[in-house]
Length: 130
Image (cartoon, rainbow, N blue to C red; front, side, top):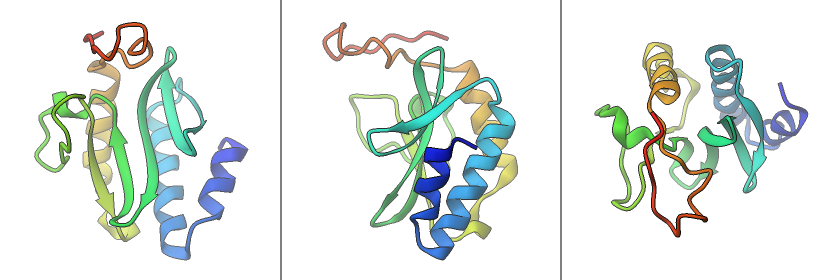
């Protein structure tokens, strides 16, 4: 695991660290080709420079976010806004993580992508890549 991500995970409370470690392990397992790093202060995985999935500590728990998750059409993923294509789920216990769902969502993250990498050049307009 990326040392910066491990440092991030280690800085969390005991239960949140378990959640972060489990998420990182599953993401690395199912997206081995993805670059991963701390981006905007939290762990994010990229395919060809495009952000795909990441997690962060928030008041509601550990938020697992898929940048193109709205297009996955998965009922367990919450869509918060209307402008972008992100969707997420919150975890407060490692036991809440459904590895089958996570595997499906990570596969969809490879297959369904919106171009966040070039959003600034397009003045906030998203285009679908896949």
